[in-house]
Image (tube, rainbow, N blue to C red):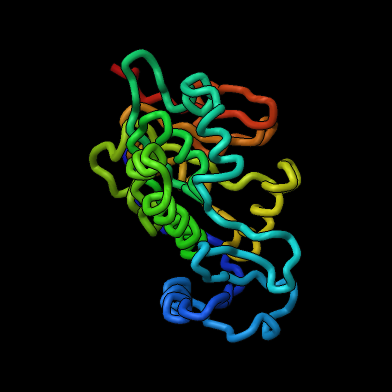
Length: 271
């Protein structure tokens, strides 16, 4: 299915200032501010307490409220829930593995068109998938890029191999996929934002932050159409269990979980 290139719609959010937490990070903070279209602040006192700020330090890039409430958001592939899932996540029996078509002799290449913080892409890369990640929000892309870089530099050998299979692109996947004249990957994976009220406290925190600093996605139908155009074998879309499918094409089948599901749009059978 071919589509015309469609301009993406992203409801804009407020600018997010950058704060250098340590001496020696000022130059990086200035470069980051330019990349995300914002400014550097000399003190958090310059910001309202509920203002989100990108904080630059040697320990990694974080998104946090200037007033210190709500906790920091950081891409960390070597610790926490992401690391636990890597070690104890169930391997190829996980629903996400079934959604992208893992099978006997099949390890698909995957383009994650809505990379976010890279958690699902990391799971698939752990299972051996070659991953292309697209993230159009400059802020989220910088957080993810920082996490991948730290994992590549300081992670153990296995972690370095995993993130070596994750290639991040800062840009809008819709335009790239809609313009494709041949498949960009075996599978296109989509995970549009869930409603924050349906998720755990940790995910609510992340979603609430992103809704403020990134804005709201307004182009689910164009995203799905472009993905179908660019996939070799199927498109897999993660949705809330009781949520509506993305508008446009009806999914071929669904995989149901406790709180989420995958809508599958098969194009042809895996060889």
